[in-house]
Length: 401
Image 1 (cartoon, rainbow, N blue to C red):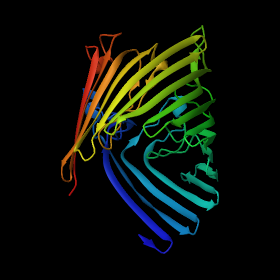
Image 2: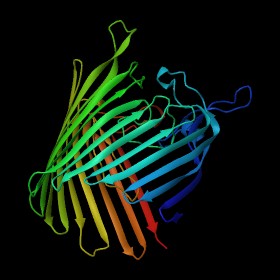
Image 3: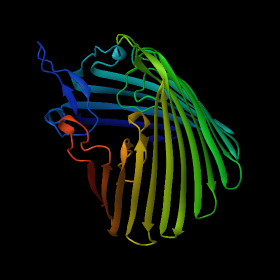
Image 4: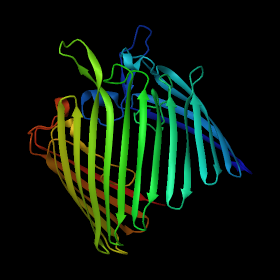
């Protein structure tokens, strides 16, 4: 609802989620150890976890816009029909447990040409606030700069959020990020960032406070209206535990990951686009060294005014292990995405078809398979596949009325 400069947004959600439940305690209470986010229901345990938890969320935001300034206040409640149990793992000492969670926060955006400022602070009752603040500076038509600071305390609790950061949870992290984009010539663009961050408390596989840094440089060249090329270099330094020779003590040591990528895209005809990529990865941890490479070829067909389009990809990959795995984004059906982690030695291919031959109706059909040359079994336990290949099929239909 809006009136003049005020805007009120309210929301309510009640939905079932997969969760791992413990047997009832002496008081008859069923605690949950965790929420499952894989979406898989392949084994007996996964089927038992299906829709085991009901989560209700409600709240809203009141915002006010005055010229170049916008301020907002957010408040919402989260209720679980089964409480989350406290974990005994040291790195989860400050994690959320219970069946109710309150979140509230303030956000601010304002523009002072050529700089746009933004920020948000959020908290739980009685807890330390979490915050993020930054600016986008449009210093010229050829150069923009972004500066961002984040600080998420170890005891900040939130279930449905995905704030800017390196870790998956919005807690136990603080850092500063600097990014830029520069138009060097009419066709040449240079962009990059530097991100320094630290974790004040323990993390999974890191039994001490740790820190890391990440750098990226990317050069894009729009050679002409048919050909574009880009080169990317990325470096990540993190810390993971390693066990000493006695086997009794573990401590974090740095690991370095170097990534090099070259990609070209060429429109052979108006209806045919070819895209290929070469990527190399080097991972170094103490005396352990892993390397890996990947190459792929995309073929995209889309005729003007035709009711269909198609994308085909063929990939070859060879890595020394999981630490040198290579991620690559893949086209998929509407509102879905696929970013497989390729490790080992093998090939992968997929074909995506889209058809919109009937008014208000669209259909996506996708088939993908990965074939490994270095193994005869994929995964283990109840998820094991006793062949060297794994295939998936996706079909989606959208009807607008």
